[in-house]
Length: 227
Image (tube, rainbow, N blue to C red; front, top):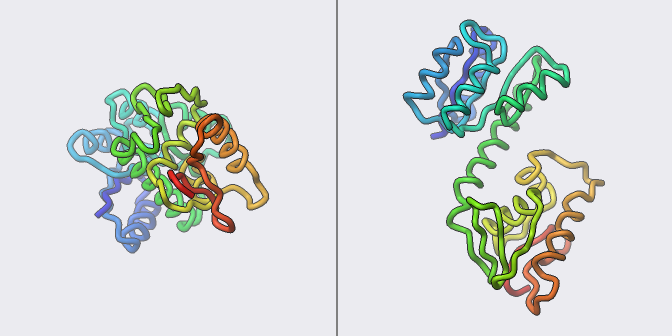
């Protein structure tokens, strides 16, 4: 079962979130202030943390910074009634993975929870998918080669290649790729995924006799040694 830590001092909001997540089959533990949240993170492993900004003892920004300083990589979704761009930027700069303004619909929070869990699962699974079709990925050094030739990828291209490698020989839709690599839902009119696929093709397929990235008509893209 997925374990989630909810750090929220407002009992009404905490009850609302906890009930909804438990109905979605998550296990939720509640902390009522920042110090308790940090203590629980030191004592237990969680799959996700939902962290309110306005907390007694320590606010959410301080909690988030403390967890990151202690090398706790658990995905953090920050909640706040403060909806200014400056507050969102501050939250992300302190180490949060997402920022959701109050009030919000529970379905939106649930979608963000699921997206962060997918990203965490992807990151955990990367190490077992380092080599395929002549491509070798060094995750620690953030570089990749094909048949010994350095590919010189941008950070976004590197993330895209990692996702394709983990899901090799599977047809991936544009929306699936956008969610995993950009953590957003692109409009259907957006060609961002297509543009980056083209960038990646020019770097990993150009000059090689066997292309690895294939377009799957009506579905999306696939990384495969043979079409």
